[in-house]
Length: 240
Image (cartoon, rainbow, N blue to C red; front, side, top):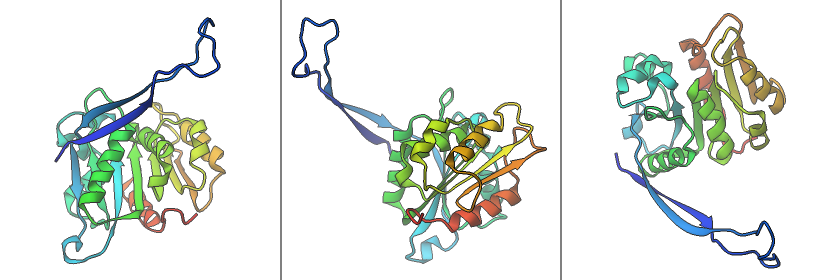
């Protein structure tokens, strides 16, 4: 795994023309260049047939919940997607990338996640029009936020039991979404998903919502994940 360097460009500290230096507030700005190294641990799954074909493959970026943070990949096996892959019982036709969030952090460093995604796309046969974003709990929040920051990168998203902000939906119009939540969730109330779906325009083919009235703060079942995967594969970037 190699570190990837991010460049951030800001505006320079220059007084704006036409403002008085005697004013109480002076309009100004700043321009500079900041560099930082990024390093993310992740699990990678390559689908059956990857090495024997010249095809481009769909990619799923999966963001785990808060219990998976740290530097022990065993913590990720509680979550359905890595557990399904580890079991060997399911053949998923995706390249799957499962980064591990550092202890004490959340999925808020969206530029680092995009840098990871760029690195994977550079190194593997990824179809850029079939990149999907899935996550549960803290990862569900990360899905909403990363899609809000970079909606142009994804063909579809599936946030599960994640906190949200309806204001983010202004940048998600036209992006296929399938959200999941438990009606008995006492950690992240189901209204977090309900208000996002309502703001996106309801429940239809490209904006779906599965509310399990009897489920608490738990991820969807394996069967629900399998149905989700089939739906994801039918979505392509910009087709809507």
